[in-house]
Length: 114
Length: 112
Image (cartoon, rainbow over the protein chains, first blue to last red):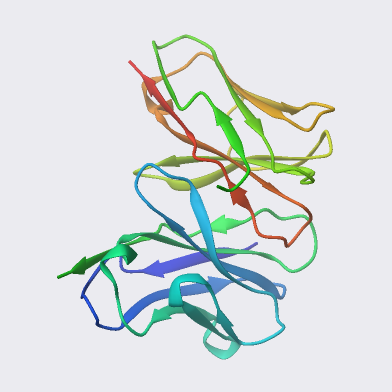
């Protein structure tokens, strides 16, 4: 079975500062890993996806994530936070093979301070 | 715009009632997923359909049921509603296993 742990339910950064949102996964098989973002009153939008092609994955809006198998981590980063990045971020995992839907973490709310 | 359409956007009903939530997937997507989002439980997977057939089941209550029709739209039926069923219900679709899920904007259900 797959599971995801997001460390920190709320992260606050200053505008222009580094964003780091942490995600650790558990999977008995090679995983697919995803980061999604949810803005208020909206559905989830895909930020980026890891499928074993490359360990460093670049996504939209300047975000990227690095897959580290030894640490079972898939942390999300952005070099410089913008006010528009304030949202809820979800890490998710599914099995590389088989028929398992996405399992989401509890989410991390990112606040950006001017 | 994800291409996934959910109706209605908001639903307010009383305990004991039954409601139906509707989802139209993105064009070409055969899989439909239903998720429930609440403050205390986060995003919980309910059920998945693939081309009309149930493919996977998650934490779906027996009072809840779903189906996917030949035109690939899906409906989630919630019956004998309780206050605790108040949540955001999301539908998502994907083309195949491992493909990203594309989410609708959700139906906010309030049970009073």
